[in-house]
Length: 296
Image (cartoon, rainbow, N blue to C red):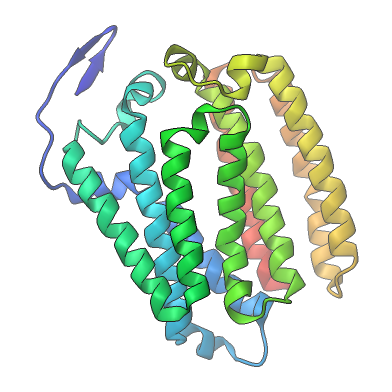
């Protein structure tokens, strides 16, 4: 299906398209999840194991596989429910019903969820329950929660933080540093999801999604983002000040400067292109945070 102005023309989707599936599951995002989990284990969990032991740890591999499979399934179900909205917000990126048949997308979604649950069970019951909960939550998010003000944003943020926290839960539940990074992932994801809602305002409003920009307007939603950034900065300066690593403290304190730049850009933003750029800026911000794990 291809949009041309206000008309929608249909093209025949395929039963199988590797390119379509890779596009659907957002493979670069999955790679970021995998790398962040291994970096968390190697640099945040640390002793008693060494670098090579974490790389060769089969249970860590299964934790990572489980998380990635559940996340990939979540991306698919999200696009499955959002086809009509996406034809307005980002018509060139629609896969379900355009490149790949809808029933094929659902089959792949189910298969990935099953693989994620099996991987979790092979590690421990706790990890399996977390994977099951995340899977159900992602379905609920795609089906209903994302159309509710703030609840959808909060859901994605919690699940993003959980992708880091699960490493601590697996190895050392009392490891504070892992949870500090989980909180970092939570805040950046929360802010980014709200910015993406501003970017997708037109399509969301057309199909009755009650996101914050739809019910509050762009100006008030921006004000909430400013408050969240202020809280994020205060919390992280305080949390990292209590850590033994001065490098981490100075690193996160240094993030105040790109945060100020983001605030200025958000204040000036008034087009879809501007908000798309801000979303990419926040993804880069997230990557900087992830790779700072090597400084711990």
